[in-house]
Image (cartoon, protein in one colour):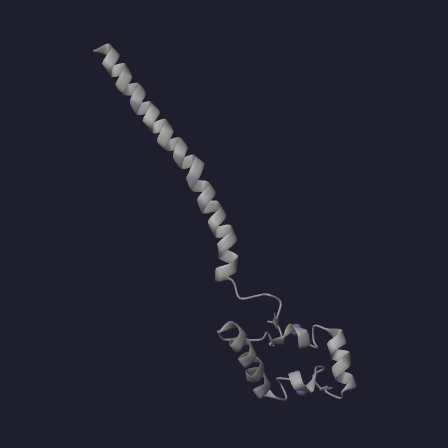
Amino acid sequence: MRMKLWTTATLVLFAAFVSGCGQAGTTPTVSKSTPTTATPASKAEPNDGWWCTEHGVPEGICAQCNSKVAADLKKKGDWCKEHDRPESQCFICHPELEAKFAAQYQAKYGKKAPKPAE
Ligand SMILES: [Zn+2]
Ligand SMILES: [Zn+2]
């Protein structure tokens, strides 16, 4: 009688230890690695550096971020002195340009462009 009780208790303890140990060994590693790798890629804004979120134009032609682009466009006479940016990127003088660039964003990412900061 005593022996049997002892064995049962040992088995229960052993089972609890094994299942508890198994959970500790597998669950955190899975839940840890999945969100850290998947979350930024799937939930964040598409951000491969192509788009200048601040100015609402592709980064490669953003004269307000890139002084080389600015100098180039100034040389070509494409410059709005009043707003210190290229005429072809001045949404203040040409509000329709914002939609034009936003359409490029939408064509590339399949979603609406974020509103520029200005
Ligand atoms: Zn910019
Ligand atoms: Zn302007």
